[in-house]
Length: 336
Image 1 (tube, one colour):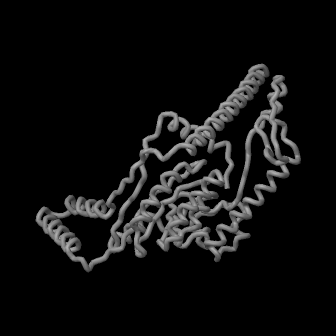
Image 2: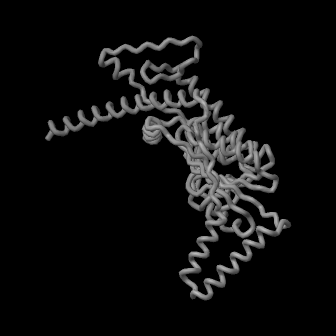
Image 3: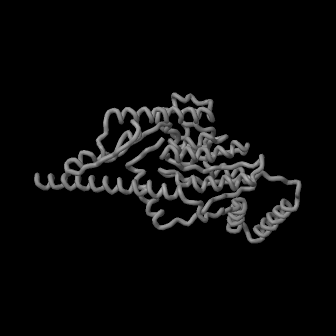
């Protein structure tokens, strides 16, 4: 029994080491792929537009077709077509337009590349009375990537376009950084909001390499070119410098959020904690408790609704690395 226990412990340690090494290699490959993507020109993406107003009308008519007698359904269908024709022919009717963007975040905010294309396309067409609704689902990740995402959304506000962000599940850390620039933030009652903080963590294989007589050399020019290392020996000075950098980033994060939500008690909400929708509303992190579905349903009566998306064809290697990135997100994080 003792022998079996020891064997299981040894196997567990070996498995943990193997997973750590593979995860480290996967992270390096992910970084390399990201660098290659950043250095290439825009791919052959395309803009896709879906008329959500038509979809709502089809849903309503489909329900009527099933629930109403045939004669009454035909009357309802005829009345709907007549109203639609009158709306199309009456040039005096100017309906509000609402454009919907779905943003699903990951560790490296890879969807930002499509977001920038969408916003550029919209800014060519948007009018002052139009609105953009971003359905944001984002747990945060790399500072610079999510900062760029926030900057892309900020372009709408800088052009005086009303920006609404709806959070049905989560907008935390870098996700909340993006949401904060909106004119109005909506959240479902149990959505996760906040986590205004900064964290850095990474494994260190120095002792494992030393036990196996493997040397690792790292040469830098500049006292703080590298603070912590995956394979080298980390020092107290390096750790202190990293904490200094994290504090500076946190201060910038707080200032950014405060600029766009001045009503917040920033010291209360910027502790790295998260809150659910009802608590977030009480703290001023969001403006209304509702789901994106209810918001769109209410807007349907007075606005023309369009969903816009940017589609690209991913290469097999990129699909593989995206999968690795999602796995990395569970155990290795450098996020706001």
